[in-house]
Image 1 (tube, one colour):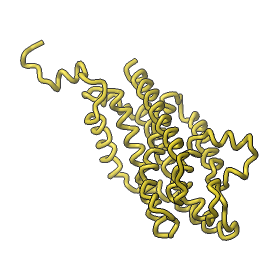
Image 2 (cartoon, helix red, strand yellow):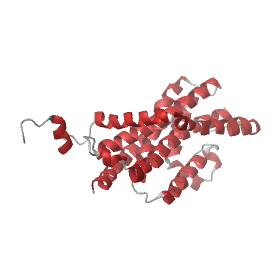
Image 3 (tube, one colour):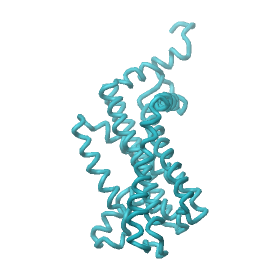
Image 4 (cartoon, helix red, strand yellow):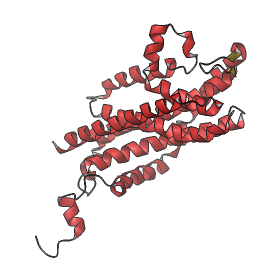
Length: 273
């Protein structure tokens, strides 16, 4: 090797480290610049949970009355639904960015072919895309939490931890979404994503307490990730804080780390094979 070879050229040929937060951050910065030019599309993701809150929480809530969740404290239907919609906003924001946008970049824009010509590795790209997706989910969650505060749907100071909890939810679903995207063969496979996401949204105690389900279905619901995300956010927002929330947080953390490990390996195999 010539003595005049620069360190940057060496990094391009033989990456010295398998993973770098700085290199992953360059991809997050790139996505931020793109989002600034399409900020209307980016901001539109906030309105879905907001419209659900107005139509179901406020509209139907006037007919339902109070709800007694598993914690045993009666809540108005709006107070019951709003934390679940906050958790769902974090999930949807992360999943749709990690799945739809990533698939387009991977299969059609061929973005990562250019990215790998730089010191950014496939693992860096996986981490960067996961971080960007969870940031998007966190942005929607922060805006929705502000709406809840204005409407008087926040009942405890523990709610300050609801945003970090939403970030954790976004991380779990973004990482798994990234891993799932590497298995998609074409646009028709997005039906499988809807089949997975929609039942989670409808049945993870978003609109009904767990006690309304028969016991076999309760066991199924208790195994789903969004249920744990909703339990975590609902407990913090309403002040029903217990040790079980740590279990829900651990569930989401393990899910995110496992999804990120699988996604990084699959992305590297797809790009370098």
